[in-house]
Length: 99
Image (cartoon, rainbow, N blue to C red; front, top):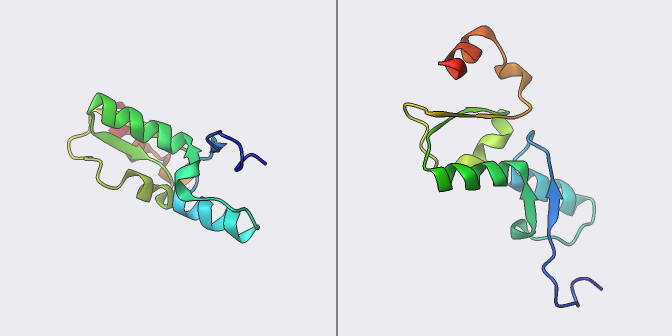
């Protein structure tokens, strides 16, 4: 019924553990009829903000989430994006983030 109505349909999640593409594959595997452009994640919001502010982030996100930041410059970071990535939360990386 929603698809037949004059509405924009979006699937919204706060996950930071996987890319939009991985999430799409998982949802379609569960039987959802969904397109990638209909998914809005917290990583989508973070990417939009990075682009608007024109900053270069240090990405403290799971490796599976990195595809959502393709094309974003990360040389000489002047911002930090933090997601669920316990493997990246160690002294060396936290020191880089604080600097």
